[in-house]
Image 1 (cartoon, rainbow, N blue to C red):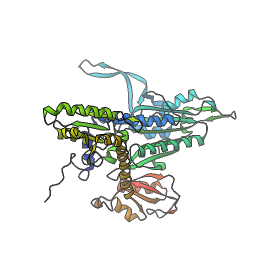
Image 2: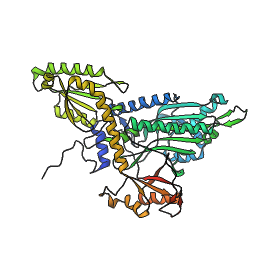
Image 3: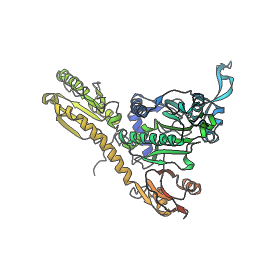
Amino acid sequence: MAKPERTAITPTRSEDYPEWYQQVIKAADMAENSPVRGCMVIKPWGYALWENIQRALDKKFKDTGHVNAYFPLFIPVSYLEKEAAHVEGFAKECAVVTHSRLQADGNGKLIPASPLDEPLIVRPTSETIIGEMYAKWVQSYRDLPILINQWANVVRWEMRTRLFLRTAEFLWQEGHTAHATAEEAWEETRKMLAVYADFAENWMAMPVIQGEKTAGERFPGAVSTLCIEAMMQDKKALQAGTSHFLGQNFARASGIKFLSDRGVEEHAWTTSWGVSTRLIGGMIMTHGDDNGMVVPPRLAPVHIVILPVTPKEDSRAEVLAYCESLKAELKATVWDGRTLEVQIDDRDIRGGEKAWQWVKKGLPIRIEIGPRDVASNGVFYTRRDTLEKATLPRGEFVAKVGSILDDMQRALLERAKAFRDSNIRRIDSKEEFYDFFTAKNADKPEIHGGFAFTHWDGSDEVADKISADLKVTIRCIPLNMPSEEGTCPFSGRPSKQRVIWAKSY
């Protein structure tokens, strides 16, 4: 009987997917839980990924006319109270500051002192305080549009947390724009969703479905919420980004008014949109395997690591010199608008252990150079996506390295898209729908779980019943799809469109 294949990560995805996810993060040395419950420490490899996400998105924002600014971390509670749906939606997640300083109690303890005149909310999102500022900045239609983004941290007091996917404090960007017309604001909402979708697919290699949230799933206070939804390898959905058309709701609450070109005072039309460090969680769950993280080359902090293999001391200097010259040659190569990031790992640890550390980090290409490679002027390399090994003459490898990275980026997207598409099912009966999401069928992957594309009558009654029964929700009403009238399989009532249902993070 053959021994089971040994993997770097235990348990494997099929054995215990949630624990596999945690172990991938640990093995890649990306993040860990902090002493503050629900918060995380993002370690250098994880933060370098976030920096590359920032860098790519920031350029996209600026290319579409936006500029960066920064707004306060603290929001007076009265600001949240101005928009009723908004405060109701976030009230349970707010962290509240009620005192301004600490004082000793005489027993070696520090206690809060000096109560604030008004409690401050630690930013859960910034619509209200940004709206307060926009109200000061806007008097005329000539002051519009305002197209501002900020990179910041936010706090949402989550009770059940998971690294990157859901933490009490997380990093994100939030765009906030104000416009003279509803048409301009709607165009902005759709434009930024397209920016997110392009980034997810062409940078993260994570295919997404663009859609609109149902009324029950909208951002609190929004008129409409658009989203991108991705499928993870356990067939659950991940909401990877949102873009909100806020109508005039927040403008009325904050008093963002302007004199139109017709000389009439009007309220502005606003939008907001954001993605967060949850994208890193999505990257792990889209591409990771039972040996650890797999990083799409376009976002890799390091593209290539060179491992000198020096079994004998007398060849060490020659091997190291070859590695240094190869590194210099590779770093002179520009790929995807970036100079290739190349690192030599000559730490004094066992070669196998060193190689597996990089496998688990998900770095795209690993090169191992020993005396034979020096003698043949060759390069022995391994692709992380397939773990395929190959040897090429040095000059040929340097010439082809860009196309190898291109192929990896493309292959990751194609693999993820094929997986998603094979796990989307059109369902027209309640019985089939319930079977699709019922745990008793979990050992039958051909019939269990994924995205169900099913008619829905538009009622909260149906959505609430299915959520209660199966913990399945409507992820979105897909955009850019022809309308298709039919019958809701749950109520028997008419349906105007199919929607995507799934279990989700």
